[in-house]
Image (cartoon, rainbow, N blue to C red; front, side, top):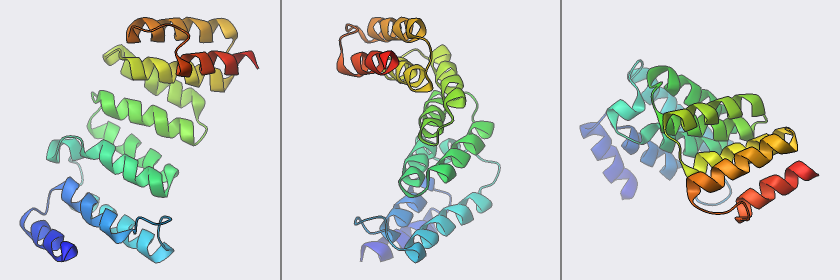
Length: 178
């Protein structure tokens, strides 16, 4: 079975966060998020892995693992995803991807000031269209004044090579006007 194959691989590669995540995903059916028991088993598996690998960033074990874990955790419990990303950032403070992910999960739990700080940090590290659009949306959602939102929309359009009429940017601006 797939589970048996994953368990065999896990025995050979006990420090592979991607493999542990694959097993956790298998514990949760694709249907509506699974039962508390299934969810608990998946979370326990991830927590046990982190206990075994304490002090080592997931991305040092396998690149991209920290964000993949955060995405999985977000599908179960956004607050746990938030705590996970914050913990990983203490181990990998130069990770642009983790700063972006912190902005996303902080936004999801309504921590707009922290989300903006995280997105600004990511943008300073590596300006990119997605983070610029995220900042425009965050400023708008937080209720910043229209000029600040308009300036960020213009910056996002510049960085992405589009116009402020691009749908996500126009929506951020429209939300600020309401």
